[in-house]
Image 1 (cartoon, rainbow, N blue to C red):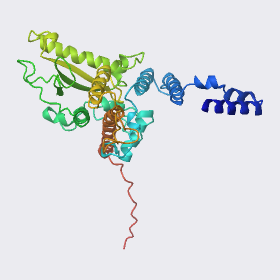
Image 2 (cartoon, one colour):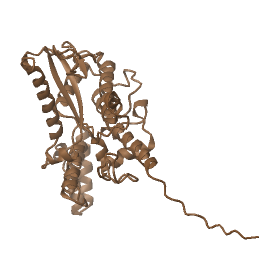
Image 3 (cartoon, one colour):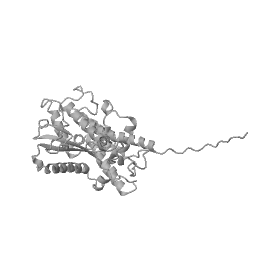
Image 4 (cartoon, rainbow, N blue to C red):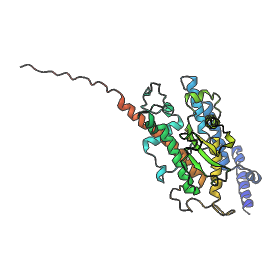
Length: 364
């Protein structure tokens, strides 16, 4: 009945006008049934716009290297996980972001010049106008040795680890361990994983040792080794390097990687929040575990229905909550780092000499 009424309305509209444009919009009922959804059409428009932006990346850049860095950055922004921070609504505490920090997040996402950056970093390198150099710079203002653990690199890494552990605990009911010393016999100081999941957690043959890593696709070295801007090549390179280092450590003890008592699993992200292959596979593991907590065949309740105090309109199921939490965690940390270093750089700049006032003193 509804289809008949809709067909009648369309026919009436068609009869009332002879305008060719309106005629095209007023489709026949069989054409409407096969018409793509708004989500599908929107996705096509967004993808097309992203391709245009990537092609035009760095059009105003001063050199080919900068243009390539811009292109790699925009390609990264189009991958799964990237941009999820801007879907996060500031309801729960973990999604609240200070104004200046949020402004820098937007400026970096869109590659808009961040104002008041110094011309040079403390390490002596020239600064770019987006603060990308600081993402890779190993300059540690707190010193060397143990103090390097206080650097932005380690803080970013540890914050990501802690966020993942909390999600596993809250939504999957799993408690990940962080004790991985002595996992390889004879190498007590080597930590092959940042967190550990027992084999029964995700139904794997061996315990999984997760190794988190965050890489910058627009870094000079990474861009140089990815001249075609292949999506996620930076995370792939990081994952391969992690596994090679692990295999070499085992080989030193005459152990083949297949005979290791546990499975090492690199979880690589790009600094934009984009997830590498290993992390995307792990997300599927996590989702299966999450869905397994509910009766098979039943409707999975929303986070709001479960009474989750962190739920929002855009994060009302497990996967969006996971993506938004991790993306906010990574990109907010970068923006906070840029805000702090910019502020410190201003304090370190020599003060401008004040003009001397001319004192006209009368002689008595």
